[in-house]
Image (cartoon, rainbow, N blue to C red; front, side):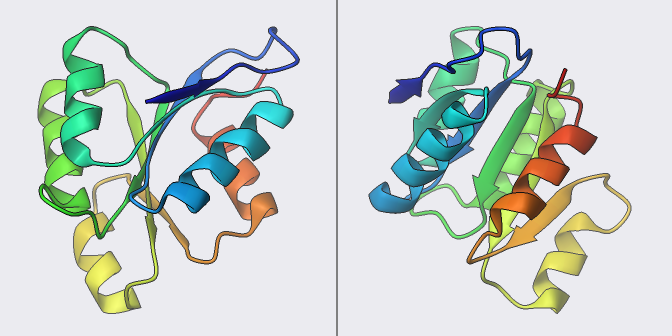
Length: 131
């Protein structure tokens, strides 16, 4: 697990990044940290469950839909059942139909890969992680 602390400690809310591609995971964490977010970055859903099990509660979880082992969809279900105050945003390159089935009537947001940084920041601000 990699933790990046922001240059602006006044930003409230933590972001848990679950992304299996190491380069993408690190880049997201560093970009968000540069903009004042505190991030935890893990490579699998199982690692995310372990983070949540020790009591860490991020404001937002950015969940890659296509993860090895436990899928992103399974992780989202786990978060909804076990950690409901955590807002979830799916990150995916999957087709619109598949994403619509997972997000319809759930309040879960999603971002398409490759992620546009401005879209990501807007999504986080909507989820209540900004000042």
